[in-house]
Amino acid sequence: VELARLHGVHAVWAGWGHASENPSLPNALHESKPPIKFIGPAGPPMQALGDKIGSTIIAQNAGVPCIAWNGEDVVAEYDRETGCLPQESYEQANIHNATEAFEAAKKVGFPIMIKASEGGGGKGIRMVDCEENVQT
Image 1: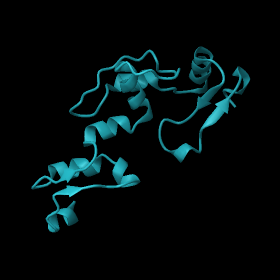
Image 2: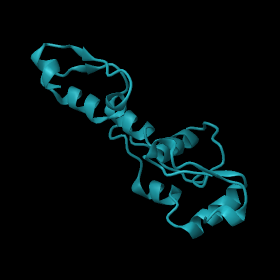
Image 3: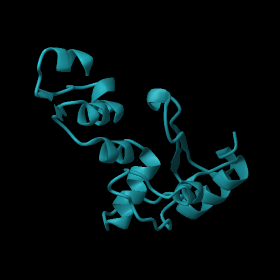
């Protein structure tokens, strides 16, 4: 942001990768004096849609068909200004232990994919084809 201001830049396009997915960049550009246009989504929607759980909650509440998942009954109102969903929505949609994972898997049906909600770059995705393998 400082380099953009120093050089009189009017707009920034982050391209691909980390900066293009980090809501702190469009937020900082927006708050700079003078404001610098970010070519891409604003920080709040980037924050909301970059989160797997949050983006699925937003999609299903907007009527977008989603695959079966453990949070399919969660109803929440997305705050467009902050880019946030109520914390209770995340709590309802998260799996906190192996017992909850087992119950959710039975409800969704097999086969299922088990994955952390953030981080890992896809390395932790695991296909589970039967009840016996949920907790292993």
